[in-house]
Image 1: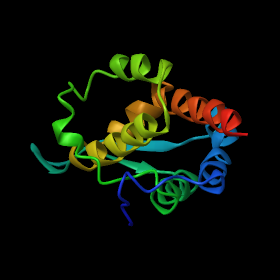
Image 2: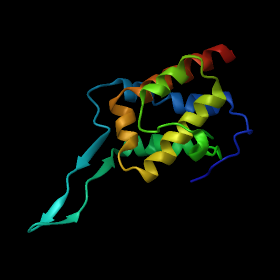
Image 3: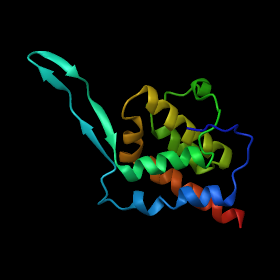
Length: 142
């Protein structure tokens, strides 16, 4: 999936494509993912816990890449305890588009190394907060 330089600006169209998923994440009746518990054979674990995401979520995930929300930002140097989601809410209060793109990048990249991190971001409503912040920033662009 494409990763863009964070200096490449987002267009209004890029933002609106991602915002099209806001109503999907606002609907608490939607099932965004399943947690598959470990499988055992006797006393041995033969398959570890993992997360499967819904087709609609995977569509959203691809759009984050396609629309330039996943950048070359070096998320490993963020110096943050990546598991503590409360700090991201603090960042969102005054987040500009650069900060928001970095947050999306951090979440996407960290999930690759920490199975289920994106699911935690969804469950905590952090993703919804990020999308609502994006909506507000998009309205300010007009």
